[in-house]
Each structure stands twice: as C-alpha cells, then as structure tokens.
Amino acid sequence: MEFKDVPLWIIAFLISGSWHEYAHAYMAFRFGDDTAARMGRLTLNPIAHIDPTGLIFLIIMSLSGFGIGWMKPVPINFYNLRNPRRDGLFIALMGPVSNIILAVPFAIIIKLNPHILQMPMGRLVEVFLMLNVLLAAFNIIPIYPLDGSHVVEGLLPEKMVEGWQKIQRYGFIILIILLFTGMLGVIMMPIQIFILTILGLH
Picture 1 (tube, rainbow, N blue to C red):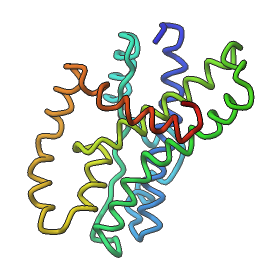
Picture 2: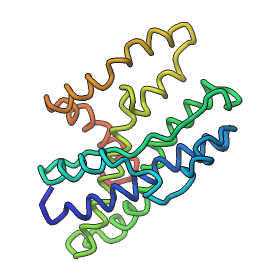
Picture 3: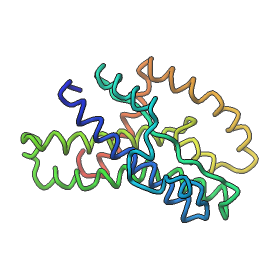
C-alpha cells in the first residue's frame, strides 16, 4: 500500500466495515433478536460501529503498509433467536457475504471499463473492491472470533460443538501467530482468488 492510499483505505474500511456489521445486525433482527437494533447498530452510520482501538490500529498498520483493523462486534442474544444454531450460522455468514455483495458493483465497473484503473477515480474503485474481497476472505477463516468460526459451529453435529468451542478459546493467539508469521496471507490468498473468480476478475 502506498502512503497516498492510506486515506482511501481508511474511508473504504469505515464504509465497508459498517456495511459488514449492519448485515449482522439486520440478519439478527430478521431472525428475532432486536438487541443490536435497540443499541443503535442497525444502521450504516460508521460512528455506531467504530471501535476506537480498532481504528487506531488500522491507521498505524496502514502507515506500515498493511492495513488491518476492526469494528465493534454486533451484540447478539441467542436466546431471542428462533433456532439459535441455524440462525447463528446465517447471521455469521452474512458478514463475509455482505462484503462480496459490496464488491460486486466495483467488479462490474472494472469489467465494463478496465481502463478506469488508469484514471484517478480508478484507485478508489480498486481499493473498495480489494478491501471487500480481503474482508470477506479474512472473516470466513474458521478461527474465533472471525465469522467463519461461528459458521463451522453451526454446521457441526451438536455433540462436536463443545469440543470446537474449547479449541476456539485460543483463536486470538492463533490469529496473532498467523499474522506475524505471514501464514495469514498464505491462507487468505486462495480464498481471495476464489472470490475474484466468482466476481469474474480472475
């Protein structure tokens, strides 16, 4: 990432991250849990979703050349869901799916006019596209607290859920190790390629 792209990256993250959290809140609301809605999270306003620590970390990491940060997780009361395991799976899955959906219009713009990438506006299009592909790929990884861990939990037979939850206690440690060893990028690359293929850009 070039230094001049840092503001674009941060703006794109605030918009795309808010869209991601809104998608979780919307699905939870549809399945019967209004917790996030009552806390003002059923909105696209980034102010409702910003985690100050996550934003500061994003800025620092962006300046270092690799932007990574986070928004406030959407609160979910599983007791309000009609079918907690099934509904929880769809609520979690909607996060990465929402970022793929948000990437679609930018992919279409590039497909219709590849030369836009050589124009001033093209960098904005490219940043939004790649950030949403990255967010989708990152969040679908089945490591707690990422969405993928909750998707796997919803798919597992009930007798295996407790064992999975015990493994996920070490999720943060595993993520940090993957990040600083460079293995996180290795894991994400084939997922990104798959998403770009779906979008018709690979």
